[in-house]
Image 1: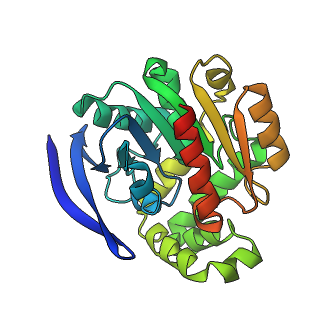
Image 2: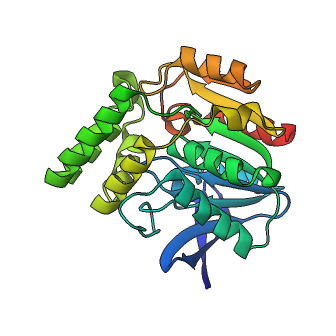
Length: 279
């Protein structure tokens, strides 16, 4: 079952039309946008984000490509499906969207958690993937300390969700970025605060138990690229470079932290444009 509406994104003196759609996956609403024509590029957002994080990038890409941006389970306008959103079940929702649109080949671009979901889809359907770009993301599983932090965050979320969302989100930025991108951060935080408790807990648990998927990249024949943040407080630049080298992936290092689409938007656009051309 699919449903669609038209919406318009205003960018300076131009107007860019984008199609908002949704389908039912296991009786759960999955929301996504669909714009442009050509080879398909799929954008997947990170934890506490939604499909609109890509709004400044979609107009550029959709000039000569078809672009899908999907709200992952428990985020944006998509519903929740149980109490653990594994990367595998979220990859199934992405595949359900692609199947409904009869899309067979894609270029995948995922930010943070969206990268984890992209890797799960690439493992399940490698024949579909023409290229995979991981932005501030990793194919490695959580280490012990990170798993402990996720468990602690879920306990705190049950007591005061808004406080833990604010803390989780703001800690992704350096003090310099907090001042320089104050308006953008506040807008993104407002979206993050709309994340339901079930969505927060289910995705944290899904990320906590996700497996290591380095072999997915090592054994792949599709194009691969890591976009890393020099000051990323979540993912070590050194480890990111090592991971890219081990998997024979292209590497782009940006000066910002974990939120490249806010802290280094123009250079991220250039990196994405170059990667799509490479694919």
